[in-house]
Length: 163
Image (cartoon, rainbow, N blue to C red):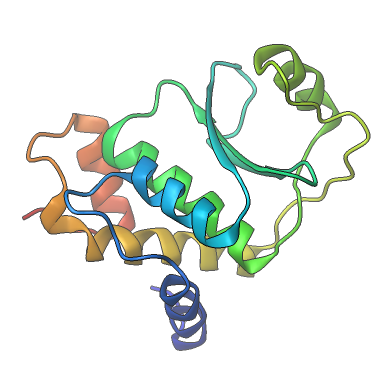
C-alpha cells in the first residue's frame, strides 16, 4: 500500500486531470488533457520485444506515450495513466540507447536520437502506480464488464475492484 504522502501527491496530480470521460475512454481523456495543456499527447502501440510495458517521451513539442501493442483494456489504460503521471509530475524522460533505435524504426516521425535519459526511482514509480490505480478506481463504473484473464490479474495486482 502506498504511503499517505504518495497518495496525497497522486491525488494532487489526479486533480489536474480534466473530468473523466463518460463512458470511460483513456484516449478521450488523453485528447482532453492535450487540449487543456495546449500540447499534443500521442499514444503509440509498439511491438518491440525488449520494450518496457510503457514509456513517456517529450520531444520538445509533443508528448508521446508508448505502450506494448499487446496490452488492451484495463491493462493498457493503466500503462497509459502510469506514463501520464510521469508526464504531469515532470519526472524526466527515461530512454535507453538500445531501445531508441528500435522505437525510431517502429514509430515513424518520432526520434529518440540525442535524448538524454534516466531510470525512474522507486518513489516516482510508486507515485505513478498509485495515480493510475486511483484514476481507474474513479472510472470503474465506466469500465466494460468483460475483461481478459490478464486484465483480471492486473486488477488484482493494482487493487481495483470490479463493478
